[in-house]
Image (cartoon, rainbow, N blue to C red; front, side):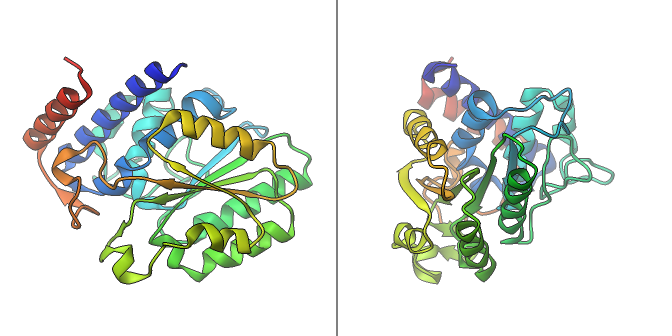
Length: 275
């Protein structure tokens, strides 16, 4: 897919995510919307996966360690055909296969359960090591949050992955500068996040996480590094594309209904120049 097609697909996934949460009435819109470009690029351009055979052993793996971004992951998986799109309207409801945080025991296409911050990243390190031990020619991709990066478990995983020289592990930090309690700057500053990862002997890049060209270049560079894991720090905007939540500090989880969802989609399409 070229950049134009990727942008169109990202717009579709954003609309699906907005409707999905609006139908339920509340949800983690902020951290979902900030990684839509990443999800779009990985699932439509990068990952070696097969929705008809979601458990094939030589597939690339994706772990959403920042589990509150589950709604965007679900929208992406539905768009790829892992399950019917009408499942999205069951988000968080009784008996759903799409709980608030990604659950590998419930949702086709989910490679690890997220939600307990830091644990998904540690699992990704283990998955990448397993691929290496089994000589499986595949990669593990994992996304963590900037607030999540305050967990000590992240840094335990970081030093372990470097020690084992996991060149098949490519991680992303969603640096959207906001967490549950407010701005990361006011909780624990992430200003030197690049040098922290460098200090753990990772290959590090920093990009605009909403720019497909920068994502493509960074991932290709990361894939060329085989003697250590890679971290791609993505500068993003929390709630990007859900205009009512952009630029606000209280956008981790937002309550809104279907009417607000449709209005937000209209505003997004107008901004993107789509009729």
